[in-house]
Length: 280
Image 1 (cartoon, rainbow, N blue to C red):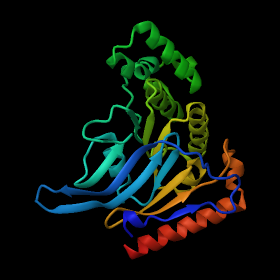
Image 2: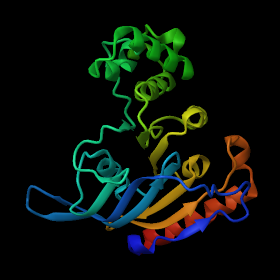
Image 3: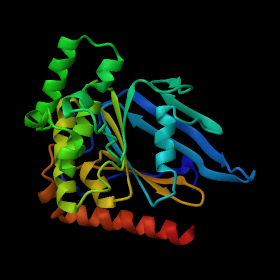
Image 4: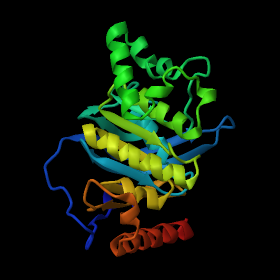
């Protein structure tokens, strides 16, 4: 199935309703192919005919098995790579250089061990020549939002894994990018911590409702977080389905997991993923 054939489906029978407000299209991909060349000269089609639309303020998850092109498309939005064919648009303009309007969060926190939490969080503001007084004020405000005020003068090796994740989130939130690109940010933590971080992310996102593009291979995580899910398949990486999720917000993630509609939607999308994987 090509990007033109992406299936549109609302979450029938789910609590709440899909937001029908007309929103600005912040990200568009049109028939994107990405081909990587190996040193040997061999060429690998990583992504084929990918088309998608992401509206401003929406929380969108890209879900699928490893190697299906999710991170590749995230990098294309960020301007870290460019498509071999097709077009990537951000706010209506082709992405042809590093996209300064997005923040990028990866699975690794990449905190600088020789800088305190406050100094790590303020790094982007320093690079942007934000005056010190304003910088300190903004760092203090975002540390309070993520519950790290008491640890502002600690160093990364002194923090727990969850605190490091919160510090990495704060470092991105502090300069207030209009779109967050998140590449499996909770993939390396245990289930209990992941649940806590998911809830915290949604709470922080709800305050500003920036656009979020969140890559995960965990279907449950996608269903808990997303307004819209794009499902990917492999060989080559491609989008095979779009699912609009209608769960009400704010969401109680523990209660949501127990809803029959949640289990039904999980099984429906799992069957799709399993079918696509067996056909690859």
